[in-house]
Length: 106
Image 1 (tube, rainbow, N blue to C red):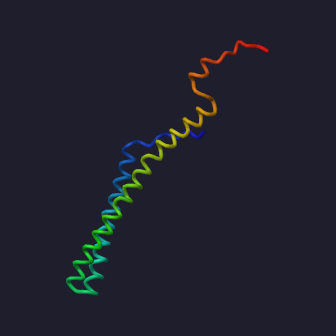
Image 2: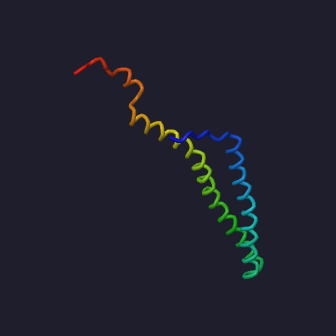
Image 3: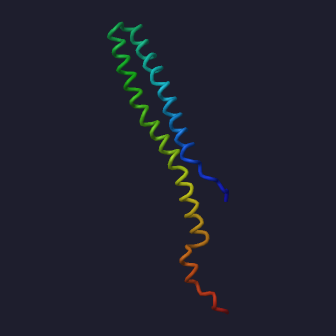
C-alpha cells in the first residue's frame, strides 16, 4: 500500500477558500454577462430580468461547489476507511487472530 501522509487542515482550508474565491470572481462575471445581454436586447426591463436570471444561475451553481468541496473533503476519509476494510478482509480482525488455536497439529 502507498504510505500517504494526510494533508494538513490548513492546506485543505486554503484549497476550499481558493474554490470560493474563484466562485466569487465568476459570480460578478455571470451577472455582468446576463444583465448586459438583457439590457442590449430589452432595455431596462431586460437588465432587471438579466440580473434575476444571473442570480438564479449563481444560486444554482453554489450547491455544486458545495458538492465538490464535500467530495474533496470526504474522499480522503473514504480512502482510509476503504483501506482499513480491505486490510480487515484480507488479514482478518485483530480480535479473531487472538482467538485462533495454533496448537493443533495434524
